[in-house]
Image (cartoon, rainbow, N blue to C red; front, side, top):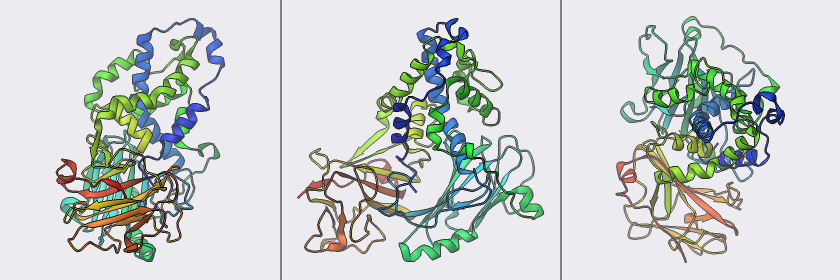
Length: 470
């Protein structure tokens, strides 16, 4: 499953289909009675950008928990779901899937009680990224000071005042709902059984169930809650959208630093306990709403583009990703383009789509990716790296070896001087075929993923390699 860069095409698809609210809105007496000014629509746009991550989190949780029982892809609220296989060329569920980790996920709701989360001891990289309702990372568990030791955490919501049971580590979440993404590194297909054993030792359950015993409650399935989360959000008409946002704010308050913008939104009927009336949008509301969403991705990319960091032939989204503060444009863009992104101190995802001369990569050419001796991606303890190739459709490239990436777990061969050459081409090279990453005959691009990067990666001291056409 890929978390980064998986949703932008779906947003653009939804926008292009022009499914935005009821056409009757434009002809209603209420709509014709109000002619909004530019300032009103500017504020509506700001409110949409501000609210979108919370709305997408809610929709993603709704879809992912729409089941009575746990499966590999869904689980009831506050319960674990585990991926059981690595992606291959046939995988088409999400774009740019990684082949490094198996995911374990929980969509939680802490409005009624805390959640007990158990992380087992592991002989490998195993971390839980805990995101609040706004898509900020509230905690990264399983790395850093506690290493890979066994831990039991108590996730508490914004209003919890109870005791913390002995032996548990409290993790305070500023919102009631959120998403936990667990990542366990995999050493290949033969390693899957070992990961299953680790997954079987993971556990999540409401505090009352933990203390009193008993089975986990069954979930609820409703066919109306099936769908693509991002499309469900962008298909909402303004009144439905903002009144749902108002309701979510009651249990998932904005941060203290958001007080100024929330006060400005209140005049539109946007805020906890308020009611939004779409008549303020005027007679052309449907068309203006459609135009606003249609331009959103390009406008956000332009306004937040300075957060993109170039290094060699690669680039990545830098700080404050996943801890956005008041960078609302950036937060919204990442929700669209890579919902669930890690903070950079947990992982960076570096995209390479051009060679050292700036030309787009094509499988009609042969390339070499050269790492100098001692210059492989530097990682902290338990960290790792990989380089994965994707076609123009953002999926893995079919090849006779079923080889989709080369990583620090691969049996590549170093040059005599300790450097490394990776061959990016359609046909096998004459030598060192273990260093060959098949890329097909068409356009392609790479993702270099670095988990647990050192500061050298983040401050640019480490220089990423260039992609050189042979």
